[in-house]
Length: 210
Ligand SMILES: O=P(O)(O)OC[C@H]1O[C@H](OP(=O)(O)OP(=O)(O)O)[C@H](O)[C@@H]1O
Ligand SMILES: O=c1cc[nH]c(=O)[nH]1
Ligand SMILES: [Mg+2]
Picture (cartoon, helix red, strand yellow):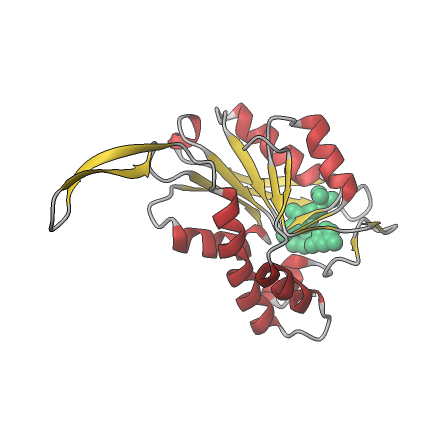
């Protein structure tokens, strides 16, 4: 992926995102929409995965068929809201090894607090797709990517649903080598660090908490 930022403007993605933004969309529908949008975003986030060929035999003849060069990429979810995007990507890449970075954002400082880290060994030799629906200040994603690099990851990309300009700038400064795929870059952050217009707290809306 050569672009640092890809905004997926596809009508299906935009329509689903608009329905997720609506405060009256209930949890079950929000979750389904996140699943559907996640599959479409994954299509874009996996566009540049390295390919090779494998000799196979169709019922008619032999051919060199295109296959993923390194097997499935490693998926990493930033807990907890990342899990809502992880599910649809796992559907598309059922062989993918999966890691988790547990982070929550301190409400006062907006700094991420780490509480969990577990990633598969393949992280050092395969492309890695980090998933988190919200890129707000960018502090959580930047911290997660730093932890993953420390664990050996070299080829990373971040897939999110809604980004703030501040988050994109933060990631570009901290990790210019990590492309971002998102459905939208919104206007700004409010005084509490929430994306405006955004969709609220993605974790709460996905899991029905408050
Ligand atoms: O870019 P930032 O300013 O760091 O904000 C984005 C982070 O905030 C949300 O997580 P949250 O802290 O709400 O944790 P949760 O997923 O457990 O709800 C979101 O899922 C991101 O991880
Ligand atoms: O708008 C925001 C910002 C951070 N985390 C969220 O879930 N939503
Ligand atoms: Mg949250």
